[in-house]
Image (cartoon, rainbow, N blue to C red; front, side, top):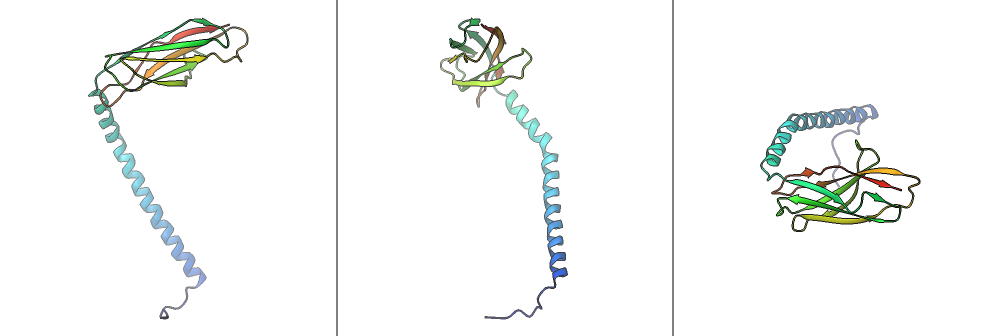
Length: 155
């Protein structure tokens, strides 16, 4: 075994070496962060260009009933144009027309239509209004779109 010709480090030297290493690491991290921030607008513009190059879509939401009882099943149908669009549609619900909307369920698009059914939770008491919307999530070819908002009453 070969011995090192360097004397063992004194505790204050070891602390100093650790501090220098930490400063170098921080400097590298700060530099990378600045690079990411500088490139962020470029990436956003590229994403917007890619999205604008996609085929525009529209989606219309219909529900099986606008007045339902707790426990009753509600069917939601999202119709997408152009009908050749592929991907998924996510249904969202909110207790106010302005939101916040929360995802309920996602369904695949088949022949321009995504359809799903959900039972109305039994926890609703009295009369409650709920607002629903559907979002076609887009694909590599077709752009994302959001449907009309539909109000249903649970009583």
